[in-house]
Amino acid sequence: MIPLRDENPSGSVPVVTRGLIAINCAAFLYELTLGRELRTFVFEWGVVPLRLTLALRFGEEPLPAPALTLLTSMFLHGGWLHLIGNMWYLWIFGDNVEDRLGRIRYLFFYLAAGVTAGVIHSVANSSSRVPTVGASGAIAAVLGAYAVEFPRARVITLIPFFPFVQVVALPAMIVLGLWFVFQFFSGALSLAWAGAGGGGGIAWWAHIGGFLFGAILMKALARRR
View (cartoon, rainbow, N blue to C red):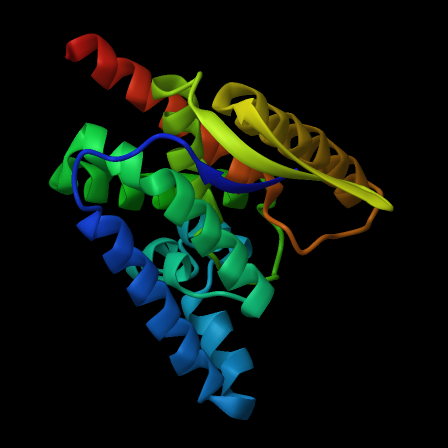
């Protein structure tokens, strides 16, 4: 299922969401200028779980450098599809979460979610030397917050059943709930695959952890309101 838009107008201009999209796009354009240096750049500024493991458990590397990558990796992407997919979800769902939280709280929510997702991914893949980049963990938190706060909001969704394509309006809880279920089972399979000596390029547990972080925090903030 591919969400196209939601029927849930925001009560304010999503300045932070638009700013985050602009920063991510600018960072990706910078990546395109690096040429052969891009690989080194990604290893330096992406999250490498083993670096965090060595810094935290064994003190073999100063902690500030690998810890900083939990933040910097959120603004890097591995390709056009990676960038467009992430920014599309942020564009559709971010404005309403920003409107509900307020701009300052939303910004801290987004950054904290990205860092938390990076930590969860690193714990689940503590021996991995593969750098991870992308805003997926933070955006997953936005999806979790949206699902909790606007479960009945209608999301216009493209459902491709080859060779037929259908566009339907579904409640956000169904669209985002199915998204989470897919992430969870993919994450479970990734752990089994890793145990068998395989590996993967998608940070499933960052998505899972980010979604749960966003849902729980939004629920707590809703009770305070």
